[in-house]
View 1 (cartoon, one colour):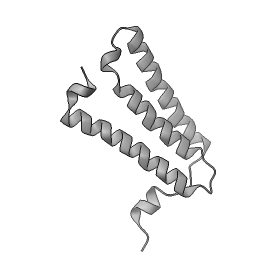
View 2 (cartoon, rainbow, N blue to C red):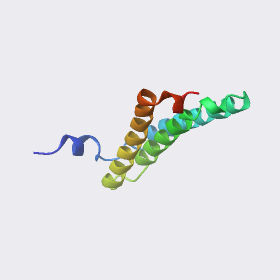
View 3 (cartoon, rainbow, N blue to C red):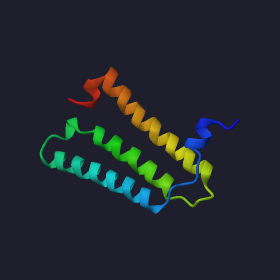
View 4 (cartoon, helix red, strand yellow):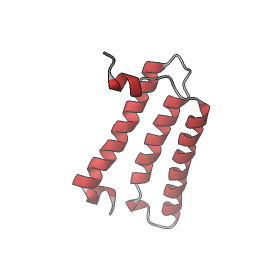
Length: 99
């Protein structure tokens, strides 16, 4: 019986379309971080860098060649772990995320 994790995470990369969306999201997060730095509120916007990292990892995973199932899966799991760490930080230690 095939694993659900294997079916969902370790599938063939989706291609350039999804990768471009992920990279555009990462650029948007970086732009918002830059804007908050210019506005003098960079201390409370560090979470945007974590979001940009998660989107970049997901974008790299989707832009790999189609025969790189395992590498794409590892990058997807890493992106999920990074974003889950941010969520855990927001719930358990919000003072580290928002000052």
